[in-house]
Length: 241
Image (tube, rainbow, N blue to C red):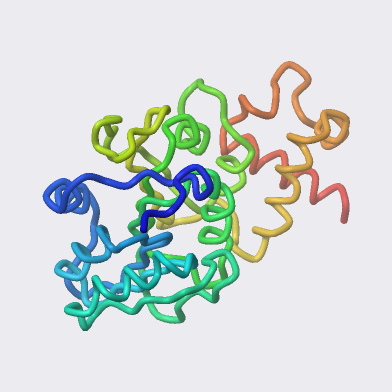
């Protein structure tokens, strides 16, 4: 039985060959542990099983999970979990992520992965193009609050655009393969992450707070660069001391 796509906000990729091609755009290697979030029947997990040392596949829906377990019986290196990924504990080993996630959970999944005390080495997610663009911290386009909140620690880029015909059923929106990689040298210490994220979110939500924090009155929060955000946060913190 197929899952209710509207309920789960998920569209499935067509064909193992195409999935293998997409994984070829990643840095997944044979010694890696890789997470597949919202694994469905295991189309991605099955291909990852031939590319990585271990695959951890999360699928909370009982019927889909049963099918996933059946399909993965021949893959000894695939661990199937019937868990809500957003409530699950992340692995305590080095890991990467490659997943076609439910679109409506994109923000929550990115937030969980990037704010973890034990974050992934690299993240590859199939997401809506509009969502991806808001996460990218460079350029003159609109920068979303989440994108600016993770920018001091994560480099974000689109690895490849996808076509509607790459999915079944075809989505109504444009989609991309998104990559998130930790900066070799973060802009801020990770110990400041929670305070910085709260600061950015408050500035986006409350123009008065942004102004009181010293934000440039000629620039909206969505137009600031990561460097400008870090300077604003640093000045704000220094005034509190």
